[in-house]
Image (cartoon, rainbow, N blue to C red; front, top):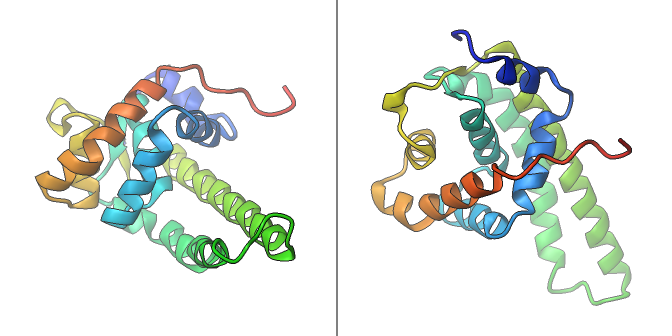
Length: 183
């Protein structure tokens, strides 16, 4: 990876920086819905989309060797996060308010969130090591183009799902990132 700014170095090294960025962005208007639409329609990994947006903000992007670097992270998602999500979703129509199934569904939701937290920490570690990441160049284009390249999606998908997501994330990324809890 080529040299990048001091801001990038600080953000890459700060424990939980990607997690805080992801929480701040995901909670911004339009981001959660756009992320979930991309997840459902394009089989996009929301953690990877948020990682790409964070890298973009830092002047970085996924390198050509990103699939190799991401393989262990993707395996973690396949082994832990996706099964938790599937079980949580399966309980949704059955989990009536106040029922034991509702409590179990909430437990699965918390476990899924913790698995996503671990995934974001692993993605930040990749970026910190410069593994699968490089400095962004003008020819990489905007965030839509970066998403499209990473997901290997056609232009129609970019217009339908990735453009609204990129716009929402770009707007959210201008908001201050929340400090860690307890600070």
